Length: 105
Image 1 (spheres, rainbow, N blue to C red):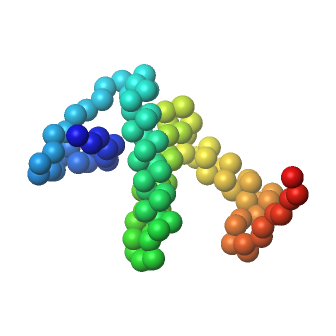
Image 2 (cartoon, rainbow, N blue to C red):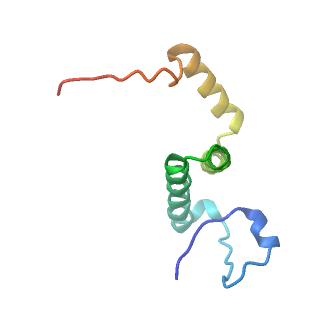
């Protein structure tokens, strides 16, 4: 038996060969957080390993959705996340230039 966190909209769709189970009071469930962590890693891994631009875009959307869901668990609004992202980018830039820090331990 395997368990995977899925989007809420799947409750409306028939899923062949699978049984759906809903976790209630999700903020209080360690199981939800464990499944959430697995889903986040799966989405990120799929995006990293893909060579297809459409698949990368789709997975990036899923990554963003899982991040918004994670911060909501902690009572943080997505506008606060976007502000933090913009502020940090303005202060330190992005990642597009491929700059690598090499430090000697």
